[in-house]
Picture (cartoon, rainbow, N blue to C red):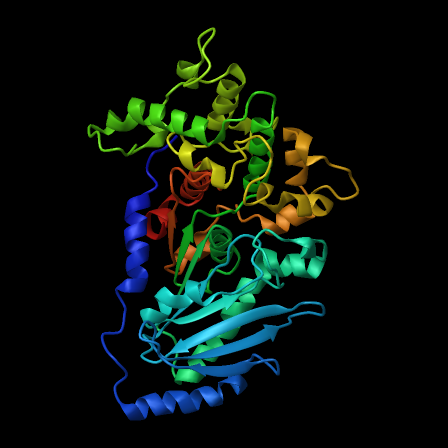
Length: 424
């Protein structure tokens, strides 16, 4: 498997994308500040947001500049309700920053916009076309219109309306438009590059949940550690993590408590198998088997992963997204896959506790999957217009596997080597 994904380099560049253009001081004058505030009062009538638009002036608080917050509900077709929030700061740097959501979206937070606002960006956010109280709640997915909005339309509609609003508000065109998203936002980022190459000049896709393999992997991992005797628990996870670190830490020539390249670490969990009569500080055979499968992943008959591999060295953090205690309960509840059963396997009774690789392949061939997944490696139109795509992924991520991101990057390179050399 190729080792170059330029994670650190991309992270540094993506951070600079926001930080290097920060405004250097306060608004030029009290008059300019007053003009911004007065302009905000009329902002709801600007652009193409329609009658639902509402503008609110927000004073500077010592950490953020003053800004005009504009909210609206976009409805490109009957039944669609795409909530959007735009924040237009004093000391604007001439650019717009679109921001992706997390989980199954459904809410919009100021915290996500703070770094951009601080750097002078006009920010744009959407709820993905529905409201939710928890990040992995998705009962709306059975509504075809809302499913379409979440899958790809909401971000595009937010972007088009946002550009028009920002240009009208500041009275000038945008210098640049950027997009940054992590997890679900990373999928949204890729969807923009694939479907709407003219929306953004540069896109940051971080740990993208671009394929339903992420959700099916969550379910299958939970099932894996629910097998008799396979539960690892926090104590077992630390035991394994310590053993992996001891085995692979110095492979990069420096024993610093960091495994530089987990993919080069081939530690075998069989090394911790309990000797006859041992009762602690070791692993049972079912635990060893479960770990090996977690590291290797599970392939379906068509050669695709039904369960993506996890990296060696990240075991101590698995519990956030993997039910290693054997009860099938973790933060994401199997990535919210339970709510997807009606759209992935319409008309069928699928028991996720016994999900099979064949069922994963079937679900990924559904109409919903074809609309939701953002795995198209053809980014030639985006690269041809000078677009830049920065991707990075934590090697020990227990949710979306870095293997999926690496696979996508390599597919893009194979599809358009020249374009990827300039734009990826």
